[in-house]
Image (cartoon, rainbow, N blue to C red; front, side, top):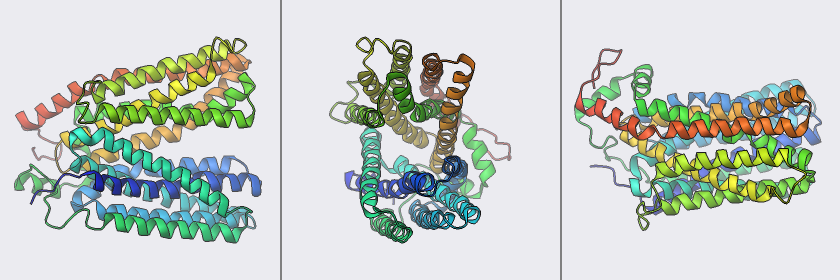
Length: 455
């Protein structure tokens, strides 16, 4: 029997799993970060390295996605990934406690723990997106992507608030108890959400013949990856994901320091400014979800148009930050808060449109390799996020050293980000043509792979 498409109940179940994933990750990347730096007085470079390491490990996402394709079911990989993530989260808390007495051994255990966290996120997150690509119909992809990502953000917020109250006042015992309890609860919720989601007997490769299914099953990872990389749309979208996410993540670590150093905002005010940016992101996500709904039916523009437009408007808003840096003394002429909200709306619009496009391209590229494609793009995103914070802060330090003046230095960094957003928009305009070319190659003529087999 063919696998049925997902309705909103199934999409919400996937959103709960994404929220659970985010709940474990936010504790390891924010709460443990603060404890290492403040309570344990360790160098801030240590948690920075650990977070970068967990992104580096996510370069295995294509292999995880291939495993999901090979097994024909995503749920075992999602459940297994959540279990590995939970174990990594508990080990990371244990490592943080151990650092108080044995910093070296604690740091080594943390390195192993964050590696497990990266593996868990890769297995669960990649398989979740691949399953959405297979089972969510095209007209529902943008609203579905928004729903799942909003639920993840809610997971971030709720977990940060609850865990913050539970571990205050801080003690090592309470940290370990809260971490273990969180991992157990998220594993149970994930198991309940996955129960019966993929039923036995459903055909995983809809529209494929038995011969093509057998060929896909006989391929090894290298052959499958080469086949996916040979698709013009897959390569083009990989470049887009890397460039756009690099620009997006590079601003995270310098926006608040910029507001404080150039505009004289207090720590509380810069935190509020970051909150305004997140509110803008939420508005942009909801706008794309509305534009992609069946009631609007594309009258507000296609998903690709929102993706290209979101990158262009992000570039424009980032140029607004350039003028804000150069004209900081003229606050009335350059409303920083409005500029940041404008940037957030554009960021949210292009990111959700990109996720919807990701699901479309994974399905259009041919059945049986959705997980491998999702893994490729997930690895590009992880690499961008890992490099983004480093690039943003390093470029800021370099600009300060070369230019010797804060306003010009920040303006130079924001100008570089605007350029990256503009390049991302240019790459995104090529996606539709690339997808058409990929379909022509796949359906109109046989393609001989390096391994000797043909499609």
